[in-house]
Image (tube, rainbow, N blue to C red; front, top):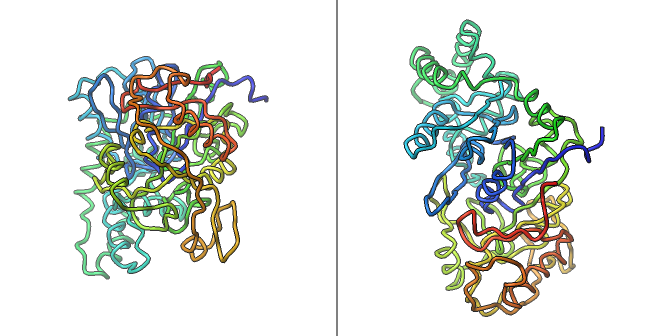
Length: 432
């Protein structure tokens, strides 16, 4: 098979998440036939603004607002059915009632005991705390890979589900008892999950078949992940990472499709850098400018409300993301947030033990000791929130985008100049 026959696009975050993927995927979903979420759970969130109205998504794909789009929650996800029902109810209260949703029968169910375990593990880690959202994602993936997990297919077989739940509680309750925590009651957990199942069971199916058929038919298929490449369990800044891989490279396994199914990969990058939680952050700074960026960019977590840490754009990080995720294009978001800053900086390389390097070291100590080497660029004062093309940008804003393209080695095909999805400017065509 040749991937040129497919009309697919993967959207990945290239930093530590929160790059604006939700807005970009929602914008691109207007042109798509299907949107596929391939990993993670409700430990991440997308804030989307449509015609001035704000929506928050944590599990559901960004195409949910378009009735003609098929939205797939693939097997690589861990899904809290209680949180999913709540999210659907909130959307329906906001008038989003006409949608197409498909949940993989191979996706793993995130259970209430996973959430408690997540909090316990974080408390016990001491200096190794990673700043988890305590949504149970890590423990759910642990059960998946230790082959103790419960899948959505199991929910449809009541006898099997009861047996699996009893076996899991037998083990988990011993852990809770050992640490002086209250045991989970089988009947209470069972009733909660079954109640949620009744509301979502009509969506549960073999999504691998659905996605594969769409690809073979030449439909426009959009793949979206949660978090960013620097939070990848394998290629991120370990141990301060998530429990799955947000890279484009992970999509075939996470969805159940051929390796060559992805035609293009769009890396979403902020015009600056942010990070939530613990871990080294080479370009981080805190002064009047960072406070201004945080306020104007509304840099507070969608899921947690935590203020995000602010740093200058780091070309090294994006080059790393481009290599491990196969970026073909870049979308630069929140460019408007930098308006009014006289002098801008971009990190072009690092200094490590007196030597200049242009890669990300794997060692935690080495990463903690990186010193950014910057290039300075002049800023712009003009309001750019109403521009309609690259040519309408101020000269220095154009230079900034072109420098990002030069330093990352990936063409800038799109940029964003405001929170509304209509404030997205295409330079190059992404879908065929």
